[in-house]
Amino acid sequence: MDYQIRSKKPLKILLVEDNPGDVRLMLEILREGEILHDFNVVTDGEQAMQYLRKELHFENKTRPDIIFLDLNLPKMSGLEVLKAIKADAGMRSIPVVILTSSSSEDDIESAYADHANCFITKPMDPDEFNKVAEIVRAFWLSAAKLPGQAS
Figure 1 (spheres, rainbow, N blue to C red):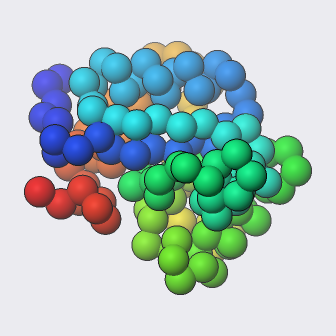
Figure 2: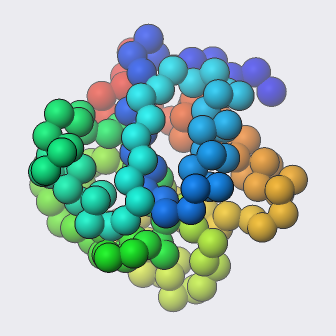
């Protein structure tokens, strides 16, 4: 499929993911889709909040346009991170896409109750993962209008 780059400005993406293989897959998705991006990765929930609050060595980072958040994280769970983001008036407008291996109905209900913008279960099969990646790229990274990215 052919995707249009949404803006001349790089899309600022924060991936909160502790699995290096999933990080690599997300990078491949971005490269294949020719999405102009500024891609940052943190590997646990505490780092995610430090990044968003510009604490420690994240003081020069810019606010992300979108966050892809795993639920199963060390130090602070993805649901705790989601709650903290959506409780903060300065961050709550950032779209948060839950991208996790969980398909638990409790996790899905909790994520939406805490104002997740989307919940996606990562398929284990590589072909199925690629299909989901195409959908994510087509919608969230190409079609959706995100705060700060309107052109």
